[in-house]
Length: 166
Ligand SMILES: [Zn+2]
Image 1 (cartoon, rainbow, N blue to C red):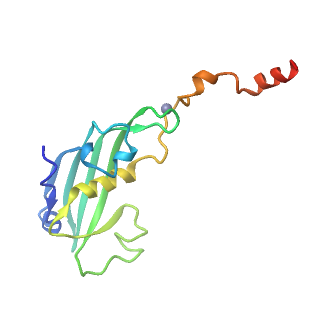
Image 2 (image 1 turned 45 degrees about the vertical axis):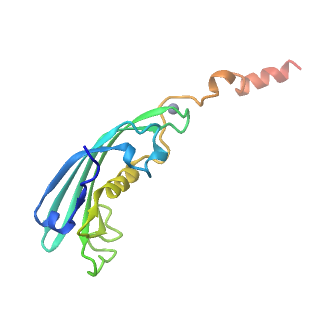
């Protein structure tokens, strides 16, 4: 499927309670590339429009497996991504939510974004993926690449043994 066509009239989309689902190829997400071991995978997305009183929202769901780079062994690390988020659409010119209000800075469950008649969902979904990634992904058990060759030599016991032999 083409990655184009992910441009929506955001407020209309929300007011009509529309839903858009599809699959996003990782190779079209330039900002994500640095975090990936390889960009061969894809993520399933679902964007749903919602309204609550006068407010309009987009609900975003992202699911898939990413191939990240382990920060210890530098090998590939399969990471199950499952991200849910909700964004409040703020009409351009309308007041931005105050810190303590829904969609405000303190509302961790809901970010405010500016509504647009031509909102491109790809950068928005990419941002959500980046937010969901671990800062330093690591395998539960792995060794740095050089560990195999110096195994044992660096242990304090080996060093002590070496001292005693002198
Ligand atoms: Zn590792």
